Image 1 (cartoon, rainbow, N blue to C red):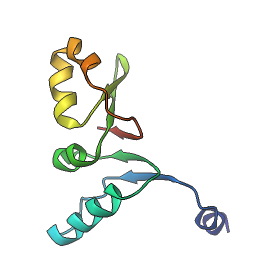
Image 2: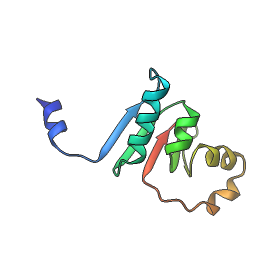
Image 3: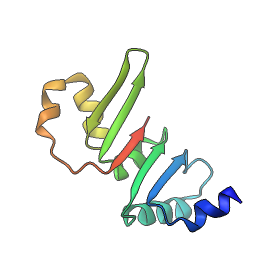
Image 4: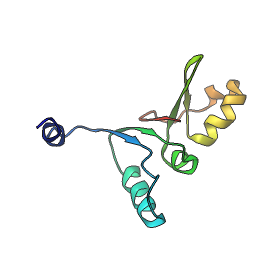
Length: 100
């Protein structure tokens, strides 16, 4: 009953845990295109760097020292992790959060 209530609630938030793990190439591309057209908020947990790079507008890194938020995609995250002064240069909209 609870699952049915969630399905009928018309929420605009997706929580995806490793969504590309068992997909073939065609299915993965279809998922990417569908998610690119999704207007709601997505929280995606993934180790798939290509997938994150294509969809992310911000990344949240969880570490023993705490939580760090980076604006941009995976390439931006990689660069800014080692050059934090460049983080202020990014001005992309923030609607997608990825935990890597």
